[in-house]
Image (cartoon, rainbow, N blue to C red; front, side, top):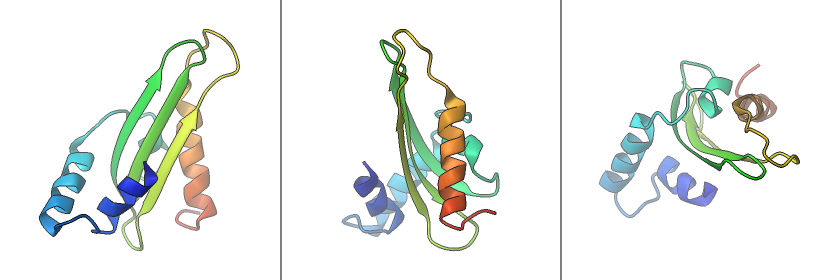
Length: 109
């Protein structure tokens, strides 16, 4: 998944028009403001897609291309699950992981 997202972020798809369509589609998608988007600054352009399965271990995921106001975009892929049967997923885990990643890469302080 991150490799496919990188193609879009780096404009490495077959044509610039195809890349622009992919970026536009990602940016318009509003899958969950409580996952990756919640962990990153509001002034960033973010295109993301979420996923997950409810049972038995509350799998949840998010993949995003995040364009800060300056600098290179970040490719973020986060996959989580719980160790308890019939647990509910927790969007805050994905949001905080996105923040930790951006901070660790020096994109936010």
